[in-house]
Image 1 (cartoon, rainbow, N blue to C red):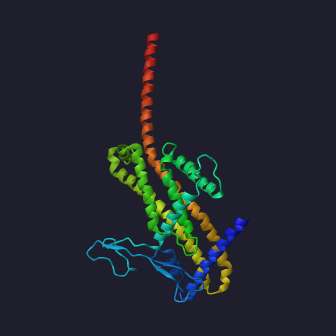
Image 2: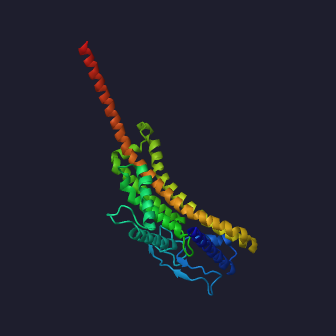
Image 3: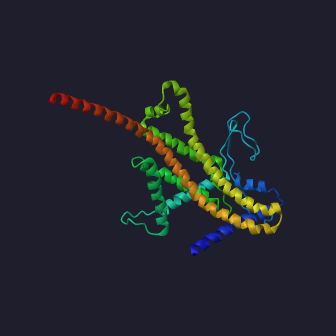
Length: 347
């Protein structure tokens, strides 16, 4: 009960911080609630600390490093806020979501080095943190990796699945704290994670089956006359998987924060403080739902990644099964011929 009370208290503090940030924005003369929502959930080259009830001179800002490399004749725009075309300028600037990814990576390394059970003489982990981490690690290994990839290849890809799970989980959870942001609500971040799964899936397919059976699988096993139709369809099917991973994680994490801010923004849209009696409890409920969604989306991304890798590995097993079936069929014919000859000799 005490732990639940502390969790509720933290949730109330977080939502109140969001609300007071919105109040500060409204007090500063900002009536554009959709603009404030997009300002909060979008990426930026500035890290802003929103002070409740406003701050003299505006909110404190940290200007992040801008790194732009000209690659075209026109060069990079002088204004750091202007869009840099990819054909003319390579933008490697540090953004708010980049900082969130660094913090999530640091937390991942910190948790994995400090809390896991490393005493090989004691089989049972000691401490709540060590038991919780071991529970998640064993769950990802046994219930996700081995069940979807198999006992032979599952442990080989478990480190990647564990890294993806905890990295996405920490990025999801960071967005629920005041002054933090959700990096997984950025389409570029989810696309990069999905591409990691995509390349690892192709590697697993080629590693398990070989380049020949992998290319043969792209024909769909149909007659060569249908290859011009089947090969593009199979290649398109390879890219629909990372597309689904990208959009699913991005949309789910972005939608929750937009809903929370929209519920709080109803106070300023309707311009009456009594609306807070309804909007704040609803925003608090969505906040706790987002806490659950943070774990669910990390699990879904890891599960689908393991499923796609398992489908790639299954190409080799399918070929082995086919050769095995042909060998068994041939042995059956030989055994039948032997029995037939033995029958003749007996007659």
